[in-house]
Length: 259
Image (tube, rainbow, N blue to C red; front, top):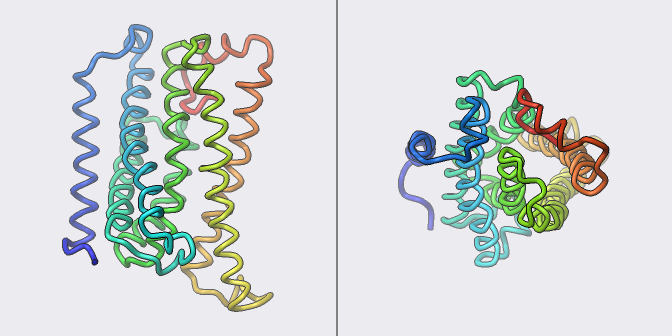
């Protein structure tokens, strides 16, 4: 079964919905430490919207694969209606979040998030509009399971709650899901696409493959590198902290994605 509404309409609807959610969060209370500073308030709101996206798409992606296991083995042509819906949801979210970062003057402080969105938005929009690589989009959304704990970590840091029991428990769950759902899913997708291209075109796969496959491989490889850097920083900060780490992080008001 294929979604009957236009993918364009669905992406627009979900983009509007995430924008409305962002505005709605302005009315909700935030921690006192956060509300004192506009930048911290914006970060809190932005992360909260991201958390909603992660809660929807991470578990949703896992359920899609459990329902249709073919999505794991046919990355380019595997399809299900719920999987297609998830690509439309994420396309709308990435577009809105990119605009939110730029329009609120956070491009420099949030450049890593911005780069990530620039890399992943075109493949998601492509999958939503063409219904090709829908399975790949869903498998890549496994990372959102980890994002639930990653966003929790950043929200706790904004609240200066690094010493709380919740932070200590969350850091182990964050590391576990980072390795399994984030790193594991990315490496699997990169290996799958690379193997497919080599099998089809041999040693000349980079020049003989389709433009779509080549661009997606470049996007995946770049995100892979970013993930390894994030893992190093995560381990350094949460498990092998240097002196005065918490103090430095508390005083850093200019960078969104702290270690």
